[in-house]
Picture 1 (tube, rainbow, N blue to C red):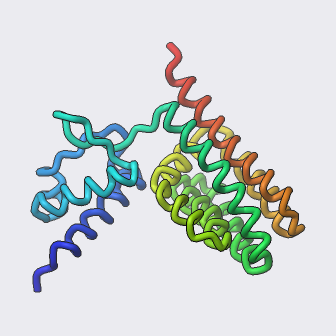
Picture 2: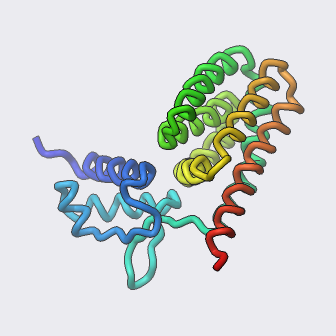
Picture 3: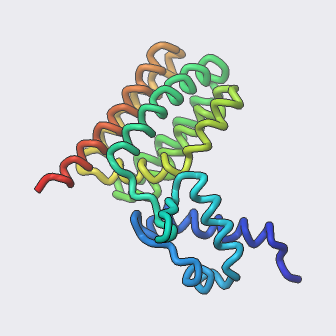
Length: 219
């Protein structure tokens, strides 16, 4: 039985999104509809629809007269995304502890243990997945549908930047220590401390990425 158009669009979107976030298609790469359609065994139409959806999500950039390209985050992108993340995630952490402390703590401790194991193996992709899952726990436990919707809007961009941040030399152990500080504040049920710890963690990650990008620009 042939798949309907909606299903094909969704399958193309999932395949391309996974390839971008997994860095199988690297940042800055041009996305040629004909080539992608052949690789996925689809017609061009669902691929075009998928690229439009990925553009709305911020993972793909449409350049007039040139086509689609995978987002290559620049300095302004990092600053904008991380300033927004800091506010959103600080509030999410406070609300999550206020609303759902005990259940939240169990989930976070399981994820943190797995993160430590991935870090020991230098498995950056798995660490990135677990890092985003750690943060998502707070979004979902916040009890705010609007906050969750706002966070999910930039979910893909966050994932892309988390992977980049984790790959910066020396950043991984600092990230783990910051997560430990967040966990301790959750254990203490300290609303002020958990918001400060979360905002500090996000700010430090953003500053590390900024420094990395600036270093790369120097002759």
